[in-house]
Length: 353
Ligand SMILES: *[C@@H]1O[C@H](CO)[C@@H](O)[C@H](O)[C@H]1NC(C)=O
Ligand SMILES: *[C@@H]1O[C@H](CO)[C@@H](O)[C@H](O)[C@H]1NC(C)=O
Image (cartoon, protein in one colour):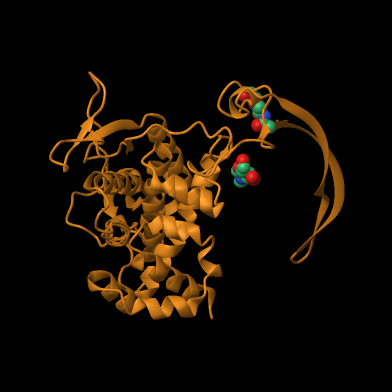
């Protein structure tokens, strides 16, 4: 079976799962390792809107799956120097997702953002029938505020703008899927809020890019289009939101969220929210999903989260010199092979005790 088709099926499985969309994803490790047949059988139980989407738009489902994977990879990049490193170790990851901590908020947000991004990107690349470049709209021409309309330059929308609205809607349809009954409404409100925060981290940061047209370098016409931020940029922005995440609690009616703490401004739509404090992730703990930081490389000169003091939870570290094989003396042969030698390099590492 083509890998694409397989990941589609994997997503079916995830959509089916009433417990926790992302949690299940992780629980099985890579979606590609799942047995497609068992997933196929389960798709029969799919109901309503999602079943319709899965049957009528499988190629979108495949982009959704890709986006979720990219989101998780971005999570691992952003958290690479932290105690909790978004590691996909299945059992432990599932535990983290069952809680209501900042880390959970980040995973939901970056996954919803990844899906928005991947679907929109596929539209721009012409890979989907349902969407394409952003259609020329009736909005005002892209002339920036402050440029006089009499400067002889015409401004027009053109090129291929990213249709982020489409990606946003698809991410919403798939990621905000109904949860199992019995799960608290507050928990659902929080997950939906963090999903939205992730999508907005893409949608609210569209840039305008322009190109000049004109004879011999003159610029008599500028065509402009809207472009999404890179997923890396989205990840960085969400990491800032993670650092400034707002603690909330459920109101008495079970349907509202109230900020915890006095004089704290209520979180806006782009903020990440959580209800429970994170564990310290210092030692392995099955209950909290902590793998512990023993053996993790740390930076003995850094004072931030990547520094040995913080990362090793003050247990100390040992220094070790390791020999690594690296490519070196690479030469390019026309055309198109690169040949390298293997060199061993010594690296000094600090590892947490
Ligand atoms: C994340 O941390 C775990 C345990 O602390 C470690 O085994 C794993 O290699 C780390 N992953 C990455 C990508 O650094
Ligand atoms: C360790 O931290 C220092 C100070 O923050 C930084 O300059 C350096 O690049 C870090 N080293 C690594 C390997 O990340």
